[in-house]
Length: 281
Image (cartoon, rainbow, N blue to C red; front, side, top):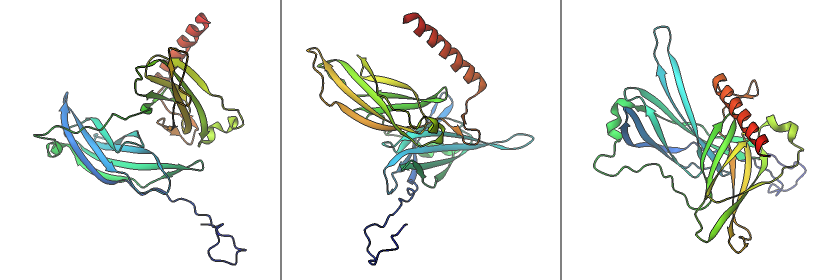
């Protein structure tokens, strides 16, 4: 907390208070356990924690210990969950293993990440029937959202890929979608900090669109407008902002981590795309 030392009044309005990190997610619960193809699926839910600034996303971690004749190791998985969801379906779990589950809330403030402590829960998969919804319909993690929203966010070849969806308008013949990078929180893009950010746009017929090659740890704004047969369009349309994340960064070496095999596949696909683009120009 910072104060103006020249003030004669203890209630100086120039007092500046930095926001605190979010509290850890509350009340981790499990439900909807079921076997699919010999693997276990189960829903992990939590309650949104208190935070001085809005939560931007959650990180879900699950890990299990691997035993070997020489030494033991811990296998850790993690996923990013959008801020509007407080549930994640864990898939492909081994029914005879014990898992350590964690959920962390992350908020952004002034280009900084404010991360909560990780809420945790131990899950013994051998007792999964205790979390099965026997005799009643399983309540899965909600997928439906109204309005323009991010349906899926994944890491693709070192960049973030996002699928945006919105409601169908029966009167619209096409949709105009535009997007723009607003800001980034990572130092990787410092060289381009003075580069003027331009808007990109596309006219499409489907009520969904995939944004590719987005930068990790950057905020993007998106606007979608309906286009009608009489050459009219919505004046303002619908807009959202989202934070692109999901690619695990190696902070020490300042590079994106993915296997050499995956990198080769990405390079091959990129070459094909470039060739196709050159042929169609």
